[in-house]
Length: 246
Image 1 (cartoon, one colour):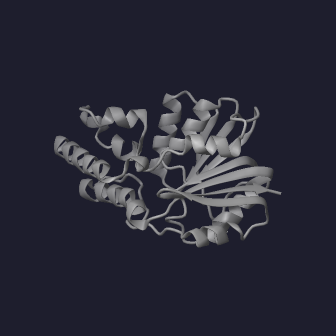
Image 2 (cartoon, rainbow, N blue to C red):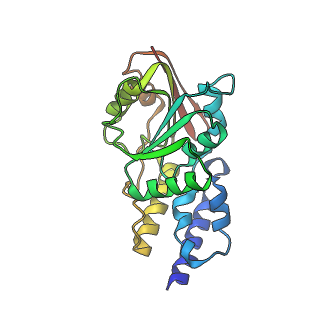
């Protein structure tokens, strides 16, 4: 029975990957290994590790640190971190900073912690928290990042208000959002389908269809806060916001 689900999961993932454009796919090294023949105990790992989106790590680094490097001791928070793709990437690349990943899914956080442990990232930790009501104090973080967060949020304006609140004066946030509901919904649907057919609780609670922002809505959303600087723009199937707090 396990082998049957392993084969079925692999077939679904491969179909999804063939469907997506190349700029919408990013695979962690663990995922790349898990897509090849593997032991039955690893049969559900690829469902958590696979990242069906554009990898914006380099874009984020250039945006929040124009000189390409943070100051030692800076703090970074990722909202909606999932299995820790960006959080671990930043923590591994910049060991001199402290990274915190936030998510509501216990299973996603479990995989994120396992990834950080495997990479020996003493500067990276994860927490179950609500992005609409963060448990952290005002002016707490130097950098905030989020990718594909607003496709599933019920109250977007409140989330932006929380972003502004927890950032320190002079702190930056970088937000990446898909522009088209069809492409944005594929990874949501794929994960929902995997959980449904395998009857396996991977902690996935997001809807099967994404809600995307238009360029005007994106600009208006972030303009609700009194940023020192604010910029929104589009690039291919994605759109971005870069904001600096007064």
